[in-house]
Image 1 (cartoon, helix red, strand yellow):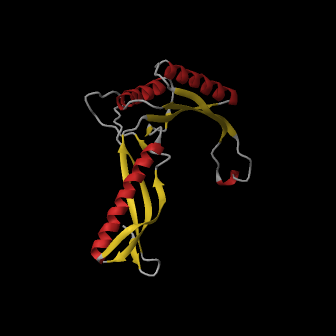
Image 2 (cartoon, helix red, strand yellow; image 1 turned 135 degrees about the vertical axis):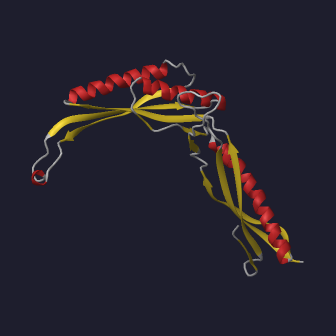
Image 3 (cartoon, helix red, strand yellow; image 1 turned 180 degrees about the horizontal axis):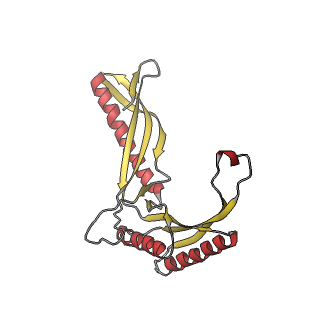
Length: 228
């Protein structure tokens, strides 16, 4: 708690207040990718495209309401032959190509039980269809602003209590608010949490247990005071 009494600045007490709200997530996000290496550019690109189509079809085949599936990136790069000390000044010889295709998967506004079950199904379907890379599951709040406002209200209450504690210790009397401002937010607009795996009664190949997401807010407040 940062606070101080200022007797020369219109007699005010300055304090900070912090509020925290913990809520279960209602959304998830993940990226799954396929990385292919081939001797020719065309071979690598075609294999990556074929696997991407299979991944998208597998995910759409889950028939999860409101599931958003889209291809968000494709890249192709040459694979150079390893160099020796003497070859470093010469252009590298290309021995193949690497193609990477990434699929974004988003599910928003779902109950916690649905997220728990569908997150496992999504990973299983993508990997079974040919994905060989994944960013893991990220759980988040689809409307973090509401949680942040609740945390702000809690931080105001905390600031009042802090000011009251100072007033009691300093034997002064608080007579009203002078000013209050937000001192920043913690995950107010980007609340998310990486998936945590835990073996349980509903275990699948990928047992996933979403935890609560914590959103915090801090305010700086100034209270007028008078001597008792």
